[in-house]
Amino acid sequence: MLPDFVDSMVQLITKTSTDLPPDVRAAMALAVKNEEPATRAGQALTIIAQNIDQAAGCDGPICQDTGMPTFEVKVPVGTNQISLHQQIREAVAEATRRGKLRPNSVDSITGENSGNNLGPGTPIVHFDQWERDDIEVKLILKGGGCENTNAQYALPAELDHLGRADRTLEGVRKCVLHAVWKAQGKGCSPGAVGVCIGGDRTSGYLHAKEQLFRTLDDTNADPRLAEIENAVMDDANKLAVGPMGFSGKTSLIGCKVGAINRLPASFFVSIAYDCWAFRRLGVHVDARTGAITTWLYRDGTAPSQPMLAPELVAAGFPRTGREIPLQAPISEEQIRSLKVGDVVLVSGRMFTGRDAVHAYLMKHEPPVDLRGAVLYHCGPVVVKDNDGAWTVTAAGPTTSIREEPYQAEILKRYGVRAVIGKGGMGARTLAGLKESAAVYLNAIGGAAQFYARCIQRVTGVSLLEFGTPEAMWHLEVRDFPAIVTMDSHGNSLHKDVEEESGAVLETLRH
Ligand code: SF4
Image 1 (cartoon, rainbow, N blue to C red):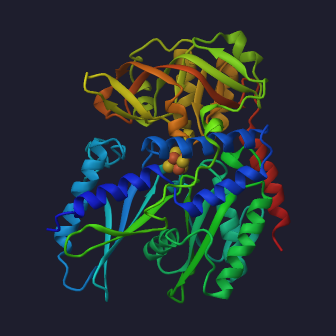
Image 2: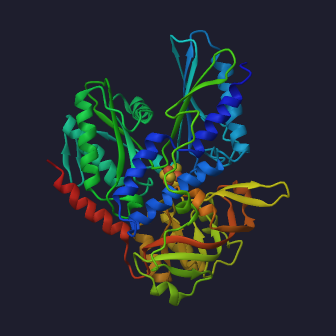
């Protein structure tokens, strides 16, 4: 047992969850600079930049989805890995108790949340030995929204808009572009991709995720792979998927490609998509004490460089004067007056609901009156203060498409007028919005600190037995900004951007 190791791991988890590394900050700062501030994409990026600074300033999670903690550990020969693994588990439970990680580990059959991020398979810890005297621990926190946009291709394959992808580097380029196009805003773009050429299905995904431990500004040592990385970066940003899929200049902030050997009969291209909330850090620790000796990816002695001037962070949502206030409960008339592209500021009561709540509402009456209500696809980080009152410490939107099988029915049955989420929804929901006079509002994915500050108080909670992320929280919000991306007249910005970027993809066949 190393006396300082648990504390070092808690520090690593806390810093990773709350403070983006300099290379990601630099890439996002460039994205902010390249976008016109008064556009949808510009407003989204300003919120993201504010959120990054707010999280670092208050040691709060950058995004409420603190993801699957994945540790890559290198130890001197002869180190007791069983003991280190146990101490990493202790650190994960402690960081969860402190609200730096959301309880994210659920039983795959019952859906029961373990409450402390521990369970079979969680956290993920990989050990390796090396010929050094100290220990290296790298950590990545990759959330569910971007994990769900991972992709794996078995070449040769026929791809929408791009035609055949052969077993060549050109075929690999097509696969990566296709994956970025398919992801649209669902993985909270602008994102970064780790790519593996080869391996089997399992090792391919693992190696793709390992590429995300490279810095965004490094250069691949293999010139053939460096060429692919540059080609993908150029082409992906021509797609104009943009921040959150709103259309815009930056769709991808990094592409890192590795290759491992494969069986002659297989040619897999595996793609690990990470969102703009690209949380990855590491440390070297003393192998006798467990104390941190060096931070990786960042200067451990200096504070992070802010994304924005402090007054811009304090100013909150960057208004253009065209924003439309929406007070819940919302009337049908107000909803029918909204159209795709409108920016709204929601105030009043809001209820959270994601997978478990939607499944529940398909079989049971709602625990609250949802007529005219705003339903927020969100699994917040919520902690109880010393007086027993609940406080939301992180509250960005979750990926809405998971609720596609249920949403239209829930709108119709219970009179919900607005659904807030991210990434958009499908044709069934679009038809449901029209029929039931409702709108879909896209909030900025990952902006958990920004949106937590729009919540004035928690007024109650229902269905807490589903665990804190899945419960229905009753919130009082003020000036909560979101963009109408699906209206009650059959229009969908997501559909438009997907079609427009698909047309660009056609031109990138080469
Ligand atoms: S930023 Fe988006 S994709 Fe990334 S973890 Fe948060 S919600 Fe998921």
